[in-house]
Image (cartoon, rainbow, N blue to C red; front, side, top):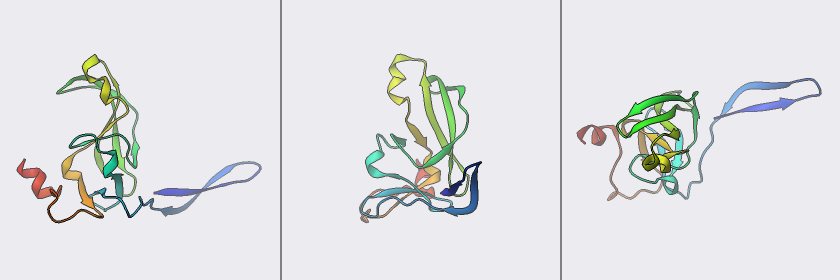
Length: 132
């Protein structure tokens, strides 16, 4: 979702109308299960829930102890419905976890596969992720 910006000689104004950003239809995508806003192309998927780039808003980073050690992470939110989806790794304190820096985790219960997936592909809907 993007707000249209208008600049004049004295200030920048943000207009109130929101426009949803869509990813190319030729790609398989992952969407927010709550509002179906497109979050990422399948090409951005590194592992089951780790993405290199996604279409979200982030909060300020903070240090958290996760299962893999101490990290500096920022919460990520759907641009459309503002649901908390997961987090972005800003900094990893352990050398074995450095590969995660700048990457995103979307929790399975918050995403669904859209556009171009055939019926044999694994579904990432809410019921499947709860069984795992």
